[in-house]
Length: 353
Image (cartoon, rainbow, N blue to C red; front, side):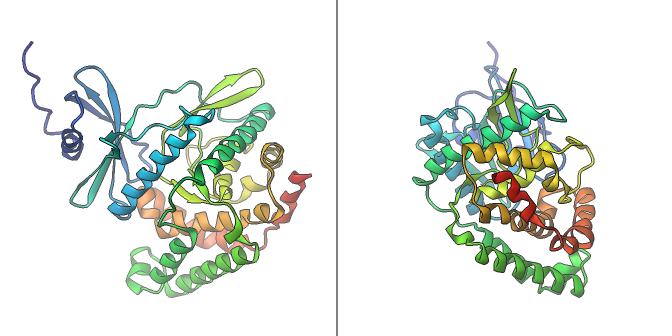
């Protein structure tokens, strides 16, 4: 058998260098980019000479230390889920020896995942049994993750630290100018930060259980096993918004999955899905399997506020391509945050009856 030729120069060299440093058997013969073209992270399917495939992700967001810590926590979470029915749900992070492998090249970092198997994907619009299934399945996954959290190290990232970082950035004229915000907008957003923290304190957020969560639940991030009465979660492979925080931060994206208009190709982040009867059905199904408190449900307003402030305003340029980011940030500042305090989230408490 002849020797395998070196990988083409057009392949991302950080992926080649990272794989060689990992030291696994198999040479890279092909790399296909499979990024969703929304986030600035890049995702690749890496084919080896023995036919096996792994997934590579490269990122420039945040710090390398946070990137490495996140994947150490994800790996620990996955280990602790092995005793539950979610033993094969999360795509594994590849390790070198006994440690999670991450790679740094200048200001870009990389990690490899085992290729996740997938079964069925949810339809664009869910029927009632499927909404009930999503509530049940997320509750059971959160329950297993709550047990795992007791044996996991804390994360350096927190809701409070992210909001404090945004508050400080809003005092920088250069930071505002780069995002086309004026000083009036900066002051408005700082008041929103204050309001979030004050309301979180009033609702007793510091007492809420902090568990590993994924935040970004959309029908392209996970697969399911469909059956006559709904479905069961089967596999999940996207960790871009992983963090250790309250389970309530997962619920906004669930509201988007169950909304009546279904999945959308041109997306926006309005609060409307949270007030559909379909979301209340989801909450009720979740509550039957893992009870929610009234203060947790009322905190959904602040979980939504946090999503807008942190993932769209503070870090939007890292999570969305420029064509998306500018529009989304303008919508948050001009429409969604100004209207938020007029919304009555207490109507969602009916789901707990």
